[in-house]
Image 1 (cartoon, rainbow, N blue to C red):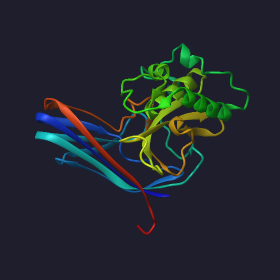
Image 2 (cartoon, one colour):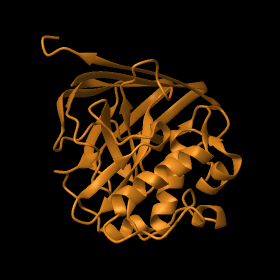
Image 3 (cartoon, rainbow, N blue to C red):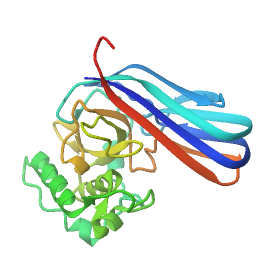
Image 4 (cartoon, one colour):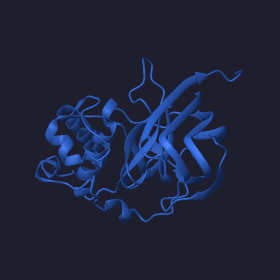
Length: 269
């Protein structure tokens, strides 16, 4: 499937900023089942864009804007060809040892309720166990927007019984790590048949299964990623994998606008 994406983020400041820098994880990687056909990142005001890699191997651009400005607009757009690989993620240049993805973070630290989700894994039954874990989490946490935030932890979301894809992924990751399964947080885009799940981007989890490798699990939609998913970046949790994070000098208060268009394209288009 050929998918076109346009993702625009605007920061508005109440007074002039003299300098701002943004870390952008907005470039889809290419691996088995996903190929970026064309992709570009542009900004207004035009800033200096430096391409590199972060510590987890994700494509990272550093955008620096100097001089007086009261707004920064960042647009990432392009076309990505995706195949359904039943959630399997292969062909990535893995730069991080698996044991790193067993590390607990502030957002994924387990409590007694998360530990209670972890049942014994039968020999050779890791994949069915992960599917069952996904279903049990989804059954306990209703999908609902505007009830959790960027700082909501996995244990808080599970206790509240409601949240969004970020919360579902964090709970899944926390439980998988308790079971000794390396797991990581993934950001990307989802082509929905009837409206977007998230106003900006989607998130899911990946778990390592010996003999198979990384497999994606979208708890919010109770499915492994298909050809409707475009993968951007992966890391320990949402903070480490954030598509955009930055800081500035001056600027007063800040407001944010995000607009995303994800559409299927024909090869001719």
